[in-house]
Length: 386
Image (cartoon, rainbow, N blue to C red):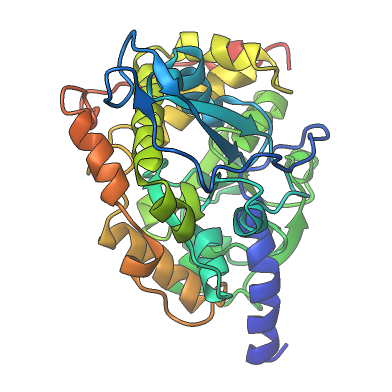
């Protein structure tokens, strides 16, 4: 395959893979669409004239629709907790959380006004911008990437150089982080490894078809643990390798935030409070997610809640922050691997002003979580029932 053909294939497959990277192999989803987008919504107001606060009654509530990446699960626990705990009500926001999935293009819904906000991959924001859409991120939920490669210990794969001669499962046949890691460690992805087009499950790894499998730490990794039958798993962590790309972000259009600046700030403030609640009350947040009707059972939600908290906390620069350095790493990996064409600028793709205002209003809250300690979970016990 020529370099140009390879680039073309990367661009085509890479977009699909990035958009789908955190999806679960579960059931069908509700359809999308909005009867009342809030593009012309009024500013949130309480009866005392201020923003929402505990016990206040809003004169009006702004309807806001957010499209998620998948069905109700702990990946979005902060949003469900903010609903359950009344934080959106306090912010004078009537929030509708809309499930997503592989057949739902949240970026397109943003552009048509059929959703106001989207929980999406930051890579998809850059891809949309490269194609001319003025989609931006106003808050970065995950500071770290959950994407990793799994192998069984008896395969002897301890470092990237050990990928040589192995069969690697990638979603859509491509992952920018894998290509970046291969290049960093001197591997030719056309000749040194065999790429397997992996589905969103661990079957190919468990049945021995592949040596390494793509997995999200909060999702497919749990599936692998449940099906490992006592075999030890090894993890290649792209965060530690320096080749991870940013994932869950809060995306919208510049037009929406410019029409609804106070709504955007109020939404971020309420959602931040939801994630703080889930950091401090993970078991309660699992119960909240379960009440929302997820497709996965409790043990998987317990695992997912703990792993998602690890991706958020501790928050080096403060909850929902997306710095220039974070942008630069993801941008360079996507650009160098042909996922996006044409350089993007931080100031065009990211607007932290609403996040910073929300953070200032939460000055009494712990937005860093420096003392965060994840739960110690025994996967053998947790997934004993499969």
